[in-house]
Image 1 (cartoon, rainbow, N blue to C red):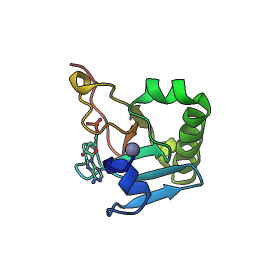
Image 2 (cartoon, rainbow, N blue to C red; image 1 turned 180 degrees about the horizontal axis):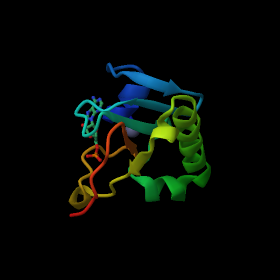
Image 3 (cartoon, rainbow, N blue to C red; image 1 turned 90 degrees about the horizontal axis):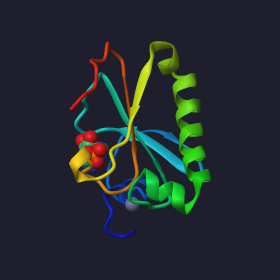
Length: 114
Ligand code: AMP
Ligand code: ZN
């Protein structure tokens, strides 16, 4: 999708600190980190949110989570512990409408809530 911020990230049309990439998925640093490690994992196929992604193709979900497994396992994040979050809709806090999984790690995380 031409006007989508995160489509531009995976096409390298805007700068991002990419930490993981395979044929289908990229992981990059969040520009406004909410934890010591705050990454975003996306599929290279555009979808608006995780429900839409599953409806298009649940294998995309599999590919995103396989990327997360590989990255966290190989970089000590799995040992350290991490949290995954995805927002669906503006009222849940979604501001970029290309499906993305937040990965938070690197410190003791507080409980989540409203
Ligand atoms: P959400 O609010 O769940 O849609 O998450 C969007 C996230 O994207 C926020 O945490 C932003 O800080 C992050 N973000 C926005 N623009 C960029 C960018 N150009 N590069 C990296 N992260 C970004
Ligand atoms: Zn997109």
